[in-house]
Image (cartoon, rainbow, N blue to C red):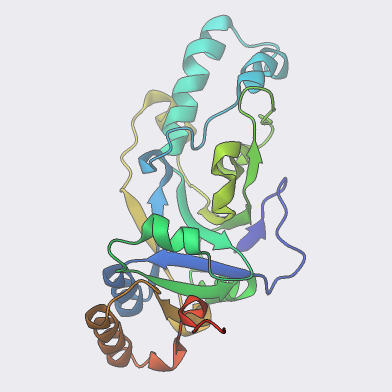
Length: 245
């Protein structure tokens, strides 16, 4: 089941473009396995993922008015840290166009492709009907002055520090099913990520090769796309057009 996060909106246009920049090997895994990879949130480079703001910490003692100081200062942070290990996320970039900065940020010598999709296509492509997924835009805030509510356990995963606002991130989160007592006790063993069943043909609108890729890399991409009968999705990067004088 796909549902919008209670506190965070998706764009009004469900056909808003989504972009997933990735290496060719990961694209081939997606096409071969017909799955989309969701990474465990505590393994993200930004360790502030899934955490709270300074003001949220101050507000916590009022939100949990009956809680002891030990529970607030020790048990609660322990629970939140373990929740991160139970939360799996797929991240996308929202933009009307390709983004040269995204190409440069993720590209290794131009060896990169991007999947162009839409919010609607992403939702419709997921064939896992047993799990529940939350989706929404990331809200970029000041972690020194802004507040993240404790009313919803997923709220921290739809906020990021304002310094990351250039990512223009949209994400889909697999809702966790885990025993809260085991989370509190730290008795949880989670994989580094999960693969969610999808229909690649429904997900992928276009595949674009990095404008910085050389001819050999482009040939490798074409070979993979032919192998999985998806070459028709390949389009030239808009950044490869010739200048007009």
